[in-house]
Every structure is written in C-alpha cells, then in structure tokens.
Image 1 (cartoon, rainbow over the protein chains, first blue to last red):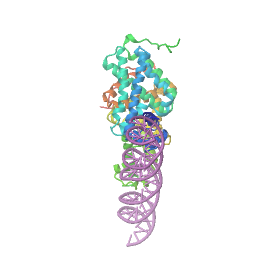
Image 2 (tube, rainbow over the protein chains, first blue to last red):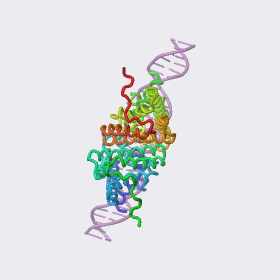
Image 3 (cartoon, each protein chain N blue to C red):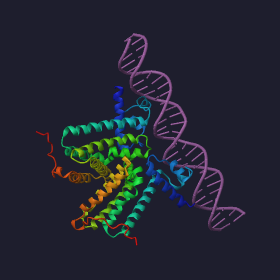
Image 4 (tube, rainbow over the protein chains, first blue to last red):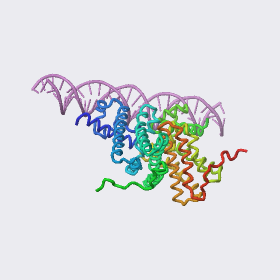
Length: 205
Length: 205
DNA sequence: TCTTGCCTAGGACGGTTGCCCTAGAAAAAA
DNA sequence: TTTTTTCTAGGGCAACCGTCCTAGGCAAGA
C-alpha cells in the first residue's frame, strides 16, 4: 500500500472516530488500531494530533465543496437546490440520531478546546452559509436577507440534529423537515411562492 | 468550611469547567485548582469523576426545576411563560456565543462517550420539553401538537446556540428571537393569536 | 484534659496520553 | 545486482490521567 493510501486511510478512520467519539476522546492508539498500524509508525505520516485534525477538516471541506457542486449540477432551480440541503438531514437521519451532526458537534467541541483548530472547522459552516445565501439571492432575496435565510436554515439543521440525538427520535426529524419545507415558502419573495414541491426523481425515464 | 459547603463548591466549579472546556477535557486537577484544594483530598468528597458529573447534572436539574417554577409564578398566561423560555437565549447570549448551550453541548458530548451518564443529562431536556408542552396545551393545543411545539422550540434554541457559537454572532441571536416570537403566533390555535407582545415589566408600579 | 471523628494535604500507584527514536523490512532506483 | 529511498514495527520517553492511601491538623464532646 502506498504512503498516500495509508495517509488517506488514517484520515478516514480519524474522521469516523472523531465523529463517533469526539476529538478529545479519540487517542492515537484508537486510530492506529482502527487502521491496523503500529502507534509509533504514525509519526511518519502525522507529526501531531492537531495535524490529523487539520487533515480531517481539510477532507471534510473538500467533500462538502464537491457535494455542493453536485447539487448545483443536479438542479438549476435554487429552490430545488435548497431542498437538497434539507434532504441530507433525512438521508443521514440514522447517524444523526446516534451521533448528532458531524460538523456541528465537532465545531462545538473544538470551540471548548481553545481556539487553535476551531477556526478551520468553522469554514465548513462558511461553505454551507455562502452556498445557501447564493441560492436565496438567486431566488430574489436581497443580500442581507439571503444571508439571514441561510443562517436560519443552518440553525434549523443544527437544532434538529441536537434534538434528534438527545431524544433518539427519527420521527421528529421527518416532522421538522415537513415543517421547514412549508416555511421555506414564506421566506421567499412573493413571486417565487409555488406552494408545491418539485417533482421527485426528475431524471427517471 | 463545612463539608457540604466544600462539596457544593466543587460541584459549582466542575459545572462551570464542564461548560467552558467540556467534560472529557476537564481533569480532577483542573477542578481541584479551581476550588484551591489538593487533588488527593478530592476523593474524600467524590469517589470518581462520574460521581462529580452526576452531582453536576443533579444540581442543574434542580436549578432548572426552580427556574421553571419561577416562570410559572411570574406569569399566568402560558404565552408569557413561553416567552420566558425564549428570553433565556437573549439573557445568556454572551456565554452562548462563547461556549454554546450548556445543556446541549454537554448532552451531545456525553452521547459520544458511551451511554453511562448521558441518560441523566437528557432529563434536563425532558424537563423543558414537558414544561413547554404543558404551556402549549394550556393554550389549547392537543397533546401531540403541544409536544411537537415544545420540541420545535427546543430545537430552535439549540440551533440558535450552535450557530451563535460557531459564528460568534450576537445579532443573529436577536434576529432569530424576533423571528420565533412572530412564528409563535402561527403555532397557536386561531383563538389565541393576538399579534402583539405582552406588556414589558408587568410588575413595575 | 484527652479522646473521637471529620476533614485535609501530599504523595504515590498503575495506566494512558501524545510524542519521538532507531533498526530494519520493503520497494524503488541505480 | 547493489544502492538508495520509502515505509514500518516496536519500544521508550516524560507528562498526565483517575484513583487511592496515609499521616496529621482540627474542632467538638467526654
């Protein structure tokens, strides 16, 4: 196995473990056993734990960028794109129920550990915020209103994730998704309010 | 200083530290230096770290119960009581900005540390949930709708806390508070919609 | 006064943490 | 093939973790 593959494996394992057990509670040894590598050898690939964290955040940033780009390719209607964002809460409901939102829980944890790496993790939120704001702007909202709408949607997703995790309740997620989709209408300028959802599986023959 | 006073001091210091730095990242030594006690002596008051956590959660439960009781005494109108809940987000905005929601962040962290003490922390959320649901029921909502409204409000508070913490944005908190108070109207049965907020400082001569 | 029992200080325990070194295996280059 | 580079295993470092023990200070009761 090449070095870059090993490195990627380490990052993937760390990513998973940071999500499931948190950053502070995940040790070098945990990651090492997860990828079946000796602890000492670790230092060849990563000089410190912070470096692994930085790599994990970097891959999450890249993954998020790709996902957002995919959503832009999948639909031209900004409203449909925004619904792609809402739908990840549904798609990941099982994991959210068990571990919460990966972005939110990591950022919250890092904010408590001093401000070293927390700044980088926040950039994932920036990505979503800017992207959502752009979609709302494309729907006709002014810049500040579009940003407020983006923040509102982000806050909604975080609140749903926290509570679904606390109460282990998937039905709650579904209820909140229905509710936010209805509310989405009232966030738009009057001309864009359709009152109905886009056709499902638009690419199906 | 009596033993119970020392114990209370330890719990108060641990409470604060768990909030600011998280449970996993707070050590016995941290708490000991905070209350100016020797680390070894600690064991006289608390046999283990879990025991301190349990004590912290117990005091938080008691404090929450007292706060909810105060809100019930302060107002008879359930709508005003619900606004008391919304207002804590405003009142604690400075600390929320720095450390997030104390209940939400602790529960999320404990959920990742295995399920030993996480169950107890969740009971704080249960307290809010039941209390809010009772207020909504008093406003005329059916039991299931009242519970859904309570969960919705809780999720709102958690989402606001996470994002205010991530972006260090107090203005966002104020905006969301205004928004939820407006939305509160649409959550009520038609007869109770007033469209205006209750008079401020109702007890002032 | 002396005893009794609550409370404290300080140290020490085994284990784990993040971090680092070195000898050698494996692979690539010559 | 030989040489050089890349990667790995395993052990060891000091520091810290949660936990535990013991000797003694202290105040109240006898």
